[in-house]
Image (tube, rainbow, N blue to C red; front, side, top):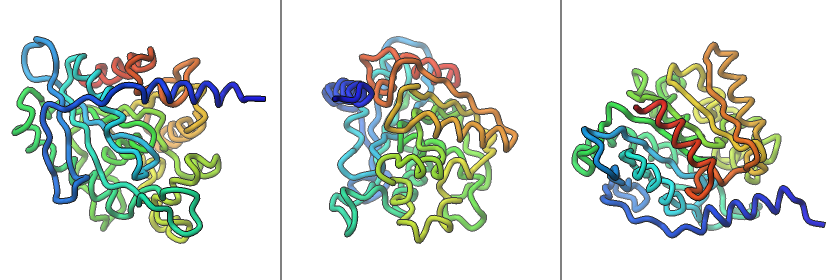
Length: 291
């Protein structure tokens, strides 16, 4: 007997991945590695003046087989809604499984975080040259799944532990974060087996869990003082709602209010699927922070 939830998830994933990749209007490197690149999408239409900038961080459990191409239709949808878009690539786990692993390992420590920090720091200059129609003073960061974790982390660098190479001396100049089904609480994610233990792999394995989690886990980096909204499919079986709910509860305990929008009747992938109504919900949440 088939599981209806699994069938729904497979159908939603197939729909989200059925769109052809959308080529960017420009690209720029923020480092020498081939994965250290940002693709830019200019705002469509005739809106007057510079457009808010949306920085997109793709998901895929921080694993090498999943790159930024699958989220380009979502980036294009945002551009068609009048946003300037920066789609960031970053180094992910090895394409080859490590000994004792069932598949490609999630993330690289410290390279994944090196890249997100470097990309965010370089963006104002890159945008000025590659996307003059963007207004970097009105920047919203969004990310899906593992990319949602990176989006929350990028907004929390000023509260990283002292001595962290990624720590900022002051909050980043962001209008806010819209995290889409983010892996936002590593402890809950590991308890639920999210993405085959990807959170632990990202940190380098169980031996590094205690030392590295305070520098990577969004639930440990609160409060941030940055306006934050989480959008979550209520039927998500990839990153279940319990992860987002735990992050929102941790924020409240730290004295910060995090918006949590639960979209009824959908799972993980409709949030980035331009053919799905949930994607319009996401675009509206971004617009509320950006405009």
